[in-house]
Image (cartoon, rainbow, N blue to C red; front, side, top):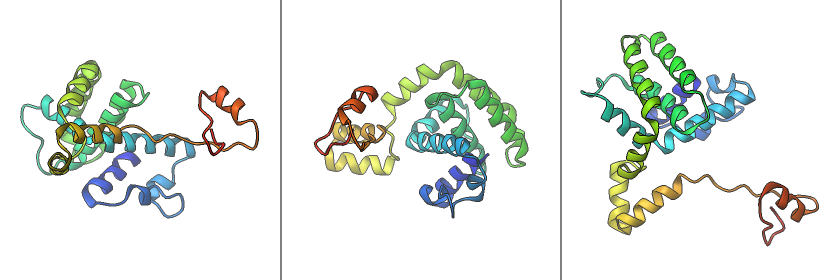
Length: 196
């Protein structure tokens, strides 16, 4: 529920994700969660926002006709569930059940609960195929930004920039002693600064 609320605020109201997830002043729905649930919501939202163009393209390909213009919350419910199914280690049935429950609770999307169930079950069955196809055909950036990147850098470099944005930043650890030992245990490398 919190992930859908935060996604809606970021996408529809252009609110800062970092501001929404601030431990002290962020969204009340996020602050009310325990640490483990906050970490899950953060992972869901980062995956969802990084891959939103591809998630939308997958669902657009599944639908015979587009969702109504007023179904923004339904799109967010689907996107949050898709991020869990496609990119996180969340059992498909859990993501589907939660999304269907959320759709039923929201008066704006209650009539689409069966559609949510059907779309997400299909996504679970076809996830490898549709993700491979979407990754090959759909850039991660919105069309207007992708076009600007291609004009400046060319199509191949623009695609490379997009793919680089999907790679999480590496984490550096500074140890008090035995950096080489920690690097070996963690499978890392000792940097010139002495960090791992």
